[in-house]
Structure formats: C-alpha cells, structure tokens
Image 1: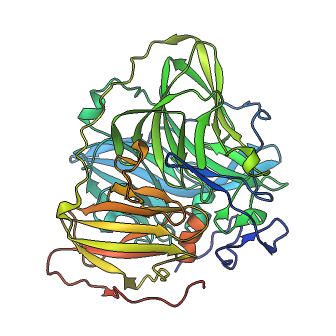
Image 2 (image 1 turned 120 degrees about the vertical axis):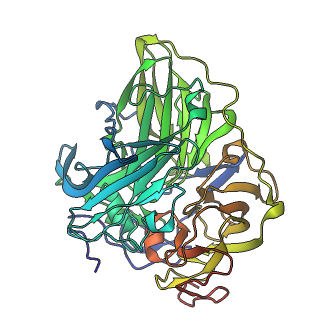
Image 3 (image 1 turned 180 degrees about the vertical axis):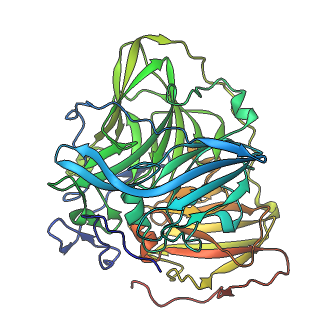
Length: 518
C-alpha cells in the first residue's frame, strides 16, 4: 500500500485544470497568454505574468561554491559491481530561514553519482528507509523491464530491492529517480534524484575533459520555492504544467559558483525540475561545444550558443574559460518585447583560475552514429498528447496499451495538442528523431534520445527500437515527463514479448478511455 510522504509544505496535487487555462497566484483559474517562439528548432518559453520566476540576471551574487555529488562507492563481488543506495529523510540547509525537510539517497538531498562501464554487470541494493513506498527508475538505461524501477516495482518501507543487469549501451549521462505512480513529483521535488554515468572505451579514447569534479562536472538544475520557515513551498506556483519555483538549485546549491581550474570544462546538464523548461546559454553569448545528448555522444561537436532542455533531458557541453574571467550560465527567455513578463535568470557562475591547467581542444569527430533508417520498422504508431491524456487515455496500472516484439523497430508519430511544450519520455530504449514536421531534426536532436520536448501541433516521427529483453509480465512506460502530468495519468505502458508469446497482462490496444478533459 502506498502512503503519502510526511514532508511539510510539499504542495498537494490540485484538481486538474482545463488544458488551456492556468492557475494564477490567487489560486483562481485565469486565462494566461503563452508565447512560444520557434527558432531553428529551439524551444523558447516566455515567463508569464504571475508565474514564479527566479530573480532576473544581475541580481545574484553567486556566494556559495557548487556542491559536487560524491561518487558512489562500489564493490566488485563475484564479477558484479555492487552499489548501495538508501532512500532516507532528513533536513538540508538551503536558505537562511531555516533547515528544509528533504529526502535523499545516502544523504539528506539528491544522491551520489554512480559510474559504470559498458560490459559490466551491476547490482544496486536499494533500501527504502522512508515511511512510504518508493521506486528507483534508471532513466535512460537499457535494461530488463523487471529492473527498470517503474511503478510496478514498489519498494516498501524497510525493504531492499536488488536490481541487476549488464550495461550494454554507449557512454552517456543518465540519471535515477522515483517512479511511484501518483507520487513521483512529490518524491523527486523533495530531493530523490542522482546521476548515473556510463563509460566506454570509445569515449575514453577521445580528448575530452573527464576528471570528475575537476573538469567534468554534474549540473543538476532544479527550481524550488521556500516558505518563511525554510520548508519547500509551491502551492501558489502550481500551474497547468506543474510546480514552478523562484529559486534555482544546482546540485542542491542555490545559484552557486564553480571555480574552474582548467582551460575547458565539461558540464553534464540535467533538467531535474519537475515542470520548468530551460534554455541554457551564457551571459556573453559565447559559443560552446555540444558533444552529447540523452543517450551519448553526437557524431561531431555542435558549436552552439544555447541548448534548450525540458524536464528529464540531458546535454553535455564543453566550454572554454579564460584566465581569471567570470561568466554566468543562464536560462534565457525570448525578447522581452514579446511578453512583458519575460525574464532571463542566472543558474550558476563559472570562475576561471588565474593560471588554468591546459586542456586539449575537443576532438572533431566524436562517435560513429548510423543514420536512422525506418525501412525495416515493423509498424507505425500514433500518440496524441492532450490535456492530461495520451490518445484519450489515462494511466491504468492494470492495462497494457500495446505489445511489441523484441528485436524489432517501430516508427512512433507523436504530437502535442496542449499549448505548452510537453516532455515525452520512453523507457528502456534510446530512440532517433526521424523528422519534425517532415524535415530533418536540427543537429542537437540528431543523436540518441530518450526524452524530447514536443511543441504544440508539431509532428515528431521517432524510430524506436526494442532490443534484447522480453518480459510478458512487467511493462515499460511512455509518458509526459512534466511530473505532475505523469502523476495525473499522462502515461501509458507497453510489453516487449517474444514473437507469439502471450502477455500476462490485459491489453486493450485500439480502445479509448473516456476519462479525459474535453
């Protein structure tokens, strides 16, 4: 039985509003304009009047040094690399008002960074020391469904879960977080999240920064609000898309600074917020190298001045920092003339050393990626996101929406009818973007992806492959990664089976669910 967490001031999930109306600061439903500007495939989200927003750029002092999550300890036992995580409650000092009740893994907030190499078998012993059920989902990981940590794998209070699998995918920046149906947002917002980094020989042979905590930096970006006693708050920030905060946390540090001791630094950006979209850029519009997205390295560095990320998405960038300089990493809004409420806000500051250690230039070729080819896909499926539904259905734990055969590929056409972009995530697989509105995707979306922001009424065709693992009893999920939407039921599930194998769960492919917003 799942119970609610006893964390003061976590905003409750309200009754779902109509999809084209937003909740204002006084708690009443009011119409609110949305500005979405599309430029070369980038997603721009204007801040609307009444929406909580971090302080505008230039008002932050960056007093606190960036906290670097520790590397998780591990032991190799009988050829298996074993990690240990404990979900626990505690209190964390963020603001001067007082300590904040939080959740964390092996600590009071967030969790350690797990690192494993391709070809290794890993096991993670996850102990639940909370007073409620939880799960741990390995976001972006290719692994058996029973190890995926979705809502069908709850860990009861006091219990320990022992998922074990073999790493068989390229080097990448992945992450882990709870996936308990109806409670995901509350548990993630309270602090349960961490990074999982994968290594492989091809990536290791490249001239890239990789000294963890020195020139290879995890950057988990979240937005939070605090009450007068220091507890998390956010009820007034609950919008149609979820909770938005007025304070930026990076690795659990409010708008910090990072002392950079090398000429170049690799930032592993993770949008760990439950609802806010970011468009990461630097205050001086400097160009950086985008080298990787969700599932690993791109074919070649993509010179960029900004990188938009929706909740759950990741990107790796390499930026050059001159001796003694200071520059802010920001999230940029569109031209304020488009919306009087628009604002650019600071995320963190990078501070160059007076005598930085030399760094090699980024390699001109990073990875060999085959062109996505849908010629051998076995079927096409269509997904429409509207209100809090996918294909006019809401999540039902007892219903499987469809089955797929193992070792096949499918083309998924996904479209979002909601006014704001929605973040679409598929478990187990790294997909390729074939086209957006019939055109090739921009370079930033040309690599391996497991999460993508869907702009209103644009048509995304994805090549989705289901290799290796078949299980007729445990499903994988596909869902909106705006976590309140996920909790509200904007999620479906599918089984991967052997050809001819009968699923153990009821499938209702082709039927509709009338529990949706009109």
